[in-house]
Image (cartoon, rainbow, N blue to C red):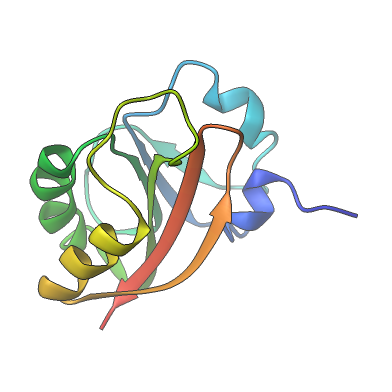
Length: 126
């Protein structure tokens, strides 16, 4: 059986989840979160899972460094960006995100397709 978005994001019971800049239809895709998951839309402390939507290199450069400091010690960041096949205009892709992340001490290690428009790249502290 295919995994839902929550499972792909690797959100577990009791974790803190930070969700930033989500598109209007996204919560319907996420579905039900595991028990006792705390979801925030503004950074405040440390998070086990962070997901940020970015559509440009400028957004990526502005958001990602600050999110690194909000990561719990074994936390993960999902940078969610427009697919090349999407109708959204973008100047980033998997490779440019991976390269920038590496330059600030994050290592990209997995990717998944969120929907027809978005892909998500998982990162951990290097």
